[in-house]
Length: 406
Image (tube, rainbow, N blue to C red; front, side, top):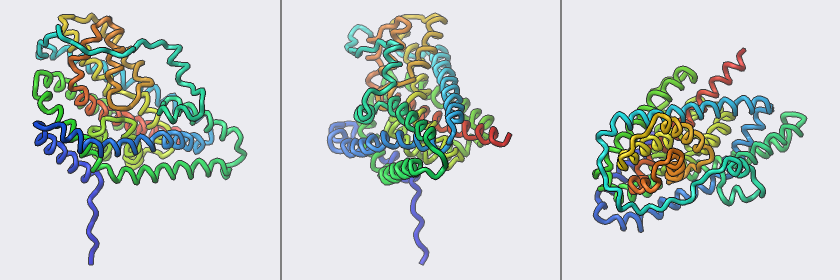
């Protein structure tokens, strides 16, 4: 008797996505039911993801470093990665600004007299940020899930292992590889719960925000999502085709499981494990994905940059402010630099938006205008963020292969 073929995980996740939307719409009249009885299971799933992500990032980057056996090679890959991320982020925020200005005439005129949003402290000092990248306690970065500090720690220890090595069969190298494989296997076990997690995370969002999406802010969301799609289709397609030697259709098809997961969880870091799997299946080298993707989940925020541009123009319009070209250029620079160190978790874009508004003198209380549907923005921008990370892994892998042939 022929064994029945098991349904692909991507298909299971997509079915869960559709069911979550249907159930969410059905529960729009009673969002508390979804919030109190469905969301907790999604939170459990997300907690498991967050639990495995910190050791996964630590050991995967370390394994990526020691597998190269060459500090100069690590530096070359790191430099290429950072340049790629900074360039695509600058493109992203520019696209957001251009399209928001083109269509700002359709933005609704909202009352700004009753805004009650209280922004948290967002003043950023460059030297404080620089100091904060380096850990002062070995365990604190893991407890606080400070991804930049974890990356720095893993790089230092990885470099140290290379410097003390006298061959490829060192026990230390094997220990790192075993620990990395253990974290990967634990991740695979958790990822199998993705369909349940996707349903339980997305259903409450639809139940709570469904009516708002159909309200006056729908046009702002529409412009943002138009920019998300344009950036992904144009910038990433060109990147993977020209620099990565990969068909854009094949790229997006292979990324679909990670895209659906990102859309449902709104967490770049939470999507990291499945993004690694998708990127490697598309041909990215394991040592490159182990280094590039964790770094990207922390510093590459293309979708968030688009959100900054669209929301800045929208908020300015609501307050009757016409931004100058200089202000828009400042937004491009601020959004690009602010993406470094912003946590890849739901809601991080709100903090970045406050920084951007302050940088050009726009009223920060305007965030209240978009706060109600921030989660809807967040789902789309997370998809762009993780897709950008994967495109970088494909591009860097191909560039390293060409370099090796010379």
